Amino acid sequence: MSGKTIILASTSPYRNELLQRLKIPFETVAPDCDEKPDGDENPYEYVRRQAADKCRSVARGRRNAVVIGSDQIAVHEGAILRKPGTLENAVAQLKKLRGKTHTLYTALHIIDTSSEQEYDHTENAVLTMYAGLDDAALLRYCEQDQPLDCAGAYKLESLGISLFSEINCRDWTAITGLPLIAVIRILQRCGVPVP
Image (tube, rainbow, N blue to C red; front, side, top):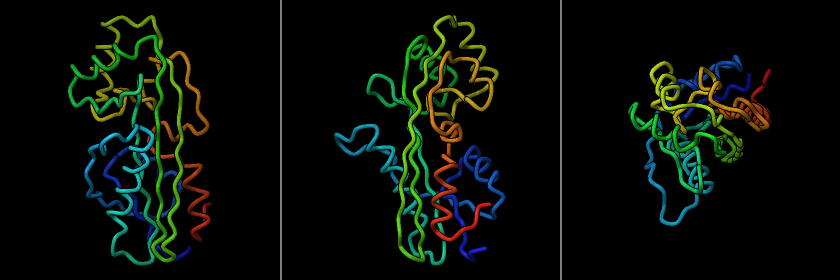
């Protein structure tokens, strides 16, 4: 092992679960950063900055650590779809997406505090929601899966997969919260053996 402490700058249970797949010891630390967009920042710039800000807030003052930060947003017609927070908001978001295509951006930022090297990577997925879903089906989905803390108001790793007619992406783990293919390659560059 490299002797470096691996830190996930997140309280997301989904990212925690994904990183556990790599079978490397890590700890989680809640990031401390403002999640408001800066002025005329576009969604792509916003998600990349958020991942970097989360990572940097946790890396600050740490030695011999590799800190992993990530952020994810759903974008429809140029607008960011926030985590819905309530059942009503979740159903409303899904109604907007029904029969349409949107993009899910997942940004990754990793800092090796030993070398002060920073790495970033962004994945995007293009998703098309099935047009034949009626309002009752969307409500039923939201009641069963409770996607209130998820960008776009769906959980693709769960029943949310049933909402889509097409999903195009390079790394399936990216659309569920953390692009593990990129994480592995960057950890290896930082001297962390995986596998």
